[in-house]
Image (cartoon, rainbow, N blue to C red):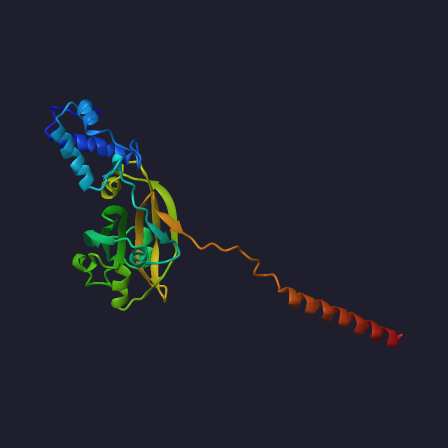
Length: 272
């Protein structure tokens, strides 16, 4: 790919865009060394100052970084880890690993929910909330959530900025306890690709579900798209046959059967 000198964009922005696309579609893989400034000059036919401007923009966005003895390399995307069984508390999980998770509210507005959300929440009067969560300044999660306006009429975008939605629900008298969830792989459409800084069509992990309180009242219905580098931790256990009786109980029952057979045989002998 080359630059277009008829393009109204400055040359350094064109070069930055080209390299960014190669990073996002993994033509340039995490940890891979980029060409030198001299090689990029020859490739694009521009001055060194233009190359340095383009590279500086990529460094500022966190897509590349300079390593002593290796030159400039593609930055590895920070991996997000979360427990699939745990509802909420993601910020605490991340902080315990020494990472920083922040939330930016993109939009919050009254909106008619999708049918599954209406059934889960028991109302059509809902807020639609869109947020991005950043891990070490890298967008890792895009969240679209519907909550009841009847239960939470005073929610605002400012209130949700860098705050836990479930903690706010708890403060408003509706402690969340959890609910069913499902995870599936999906492809990033244009809006998700822009939000998460990935290429269109890149794989994402979609976590979808509902959070309820102790009475079963639906508090939120959500769709959360995660970067493909996300790791979901699951505490799996071997299924057991709940109908099976303990070994000791079976032994005692067999002893009782033998005792009963012996008693019946004695009774039959006396009768004859």
